Length: 111
Image 1 (cartoon, rainbow, N blue to C red):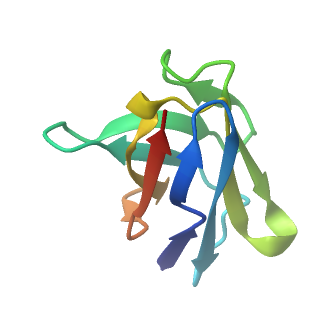
Image 2 (tube, helix red, strand yellow; image 1 turned 30 degrees about the vertical axis):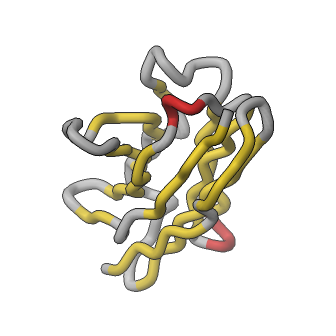
């Protein structure tokens, strides 16, 4: 199972960014998936999750701004980041149940 994350980069505060995570050797559609992030000096923490029944959950800090979704036909999970803030700057990792991780993609939000 390999997860490939993409879509990171530099964005403006108040703009939008979209992260993608594509799985090979694995099926996203019947598994819980999620996004985590880790800023320098901090532990990796949860950003958003999506259950196999498509119930979503979010960290309080991103509720109302970020949206997690999946496209089963493309075996891809997305994180739509609207109105990002400088404090959202971190390396973002995609995750699939049970313990599969993507390589991380850097997101930098400038003010």
